[in-house]
Image (tube, rainbow, N blue to C red):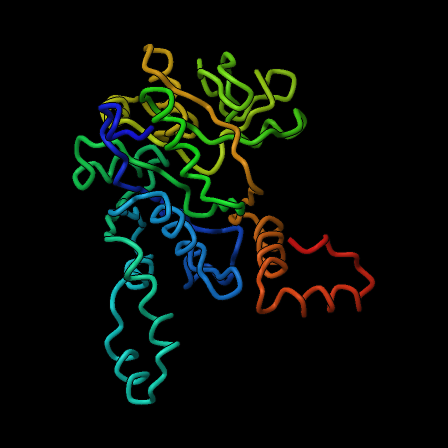
Length: 303
């Protein structure tokens, strides 16, 4: 069942908050936005937009900070380089060059002041309007058989609407690094959300389901964000707004994602994503496995 079939507005817009300073990747993030760091030969931001496109998203809004205009340029046509490659008849490279600009209609808006990730999402309102939308973090990757976002959209369609948050299970000892979902079970992989507790102490965590990767959000979230008072650190947080939706009775669902999730905004998470992506590629995977064996490591079996 799809949103169009059951009367729901289909999800055709995507929002990517990408205004963070990337301080964990200094000094490279002085000039290169962390979202442009590559996983092999594909920047993280392209992987996120690709996931949206593969999930049916046609229009993407990237919310950037001043100084991160390179994220906008990445999705624009590079006529100078295209002409140079054409003169040299390098058609394969031309196709790679043009790939990002063909994924979706990507536009950027600038978050002039760092007032929190909820405030960043609110900046997309003029472009999204009164439409449901997907929101994926600009440094969170899920590798699997299909796009993680499609799992969230499918859940929204199946459950008759409402907002949906992606989740993974984490040890209680790590709960303080996440927003943790409190809710009631719907099925084996789905909860009806009562609240999302931001960075609780391990002993206070309401579950082992941590909110990660992103959301599918109904447009009412914009009204909540616009009226929300600043929270932790004096900033507007998206998890607070989603919790407010749930407390008001609006349906909010939590879905345990299938696939391997990586926090690519963290150095270790980024390296893990890089290595696992390399191992999964047909062109360099075999050579990568041979290299690991030479080092005495035992890589996982081929996928």
